[in-house]
Image 1 (cartoon, protein in one colour):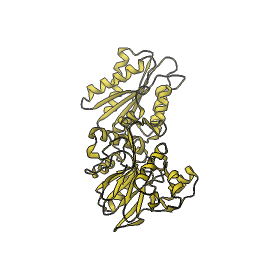
Image 2 (cartoon, rainbow, N blue to C red):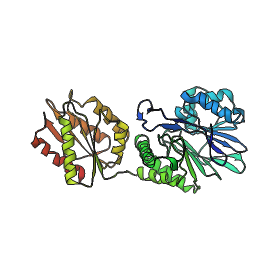
Image 3 (spheres, rainbow, N blue to C red):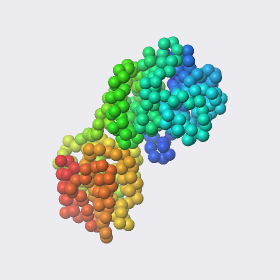
Image 4 (spheres, rainbow, N blue to C red):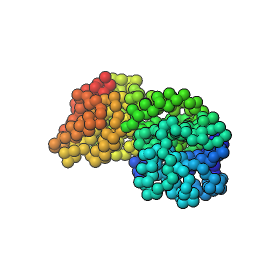
Length: 394
Ligand code: FEO
């Protein structure tokens, strides 16, 4: 059923309490999620986005219980990714001539995915659409936030920014609004979303926020396509994005490793202990890459000023969980962070070099010290953790 969010605007999405993975299995969902679509019923009726096709039939039935689909004058497709466009083919079967307002890139992505030549109306930043009763929609291209086709739509007079993925979070909140959510969870999920999805596009975020602020449009509500609607102090998430996009870091060092027989694990804990002694104010967190959720660890990396990554040498390389994790790390294009490598070895001992190379290619400032230990570390070997700790703290 639709839920009114303001004036003649309703949420008509799907709250998914059962979802446990997203983007295939590449993004862990721990606190549920939602796909948010919106219905505006002014002189013109507008549907903003749809939802993912596994729930498409239910979405259409919901819509039909609220309105006659033939009364939809315009569809706005802010983004072509299937979690927002998945139910579009079902709707278009019933109302095939309805115009779809979207960016030129969204035409490409929608045609590419659904192989249909619908009645697309290409819009650019600043284009408007009159929806009656003195209200209009203003379109804002949001290129690379996070796809080339992404767009936001602003509703005048009600001052609602339908931001699609930007400002979203994977969290299920039945009451829909940020002031009804568990604040700690919401902050954590908003940061996880930024860290794991938007970090590579941080420079675009900065420029886009400046552009949006330059429009001087009042914003009473930010209605993204996942998670809560920012109703209470909506500016807070814009301020957070501005901070997060600006080489964000806290006084934290994260140590991530995998270990075969416990030697590299001992090194991880020795480094943590030395950091604790050198800089007791610094938060130190340790994660076994093979056992802990990679998206949660990346959120901790996002918060960190420095990281240490460890693996024993296996087959002249690193453990496969570490190489997969390092590939993901590289794709996120973190900036302004120090890093170091550590690991035990029995025979050839390449892992530290392999990790350092990954870290350099990933944009980290690799410190001069590393910690490479033959066989199981002795107390004397563990003492060498002081050097790596000094480099990371300093
Ligand atoms: Fe980029 Fe929520 O899809």
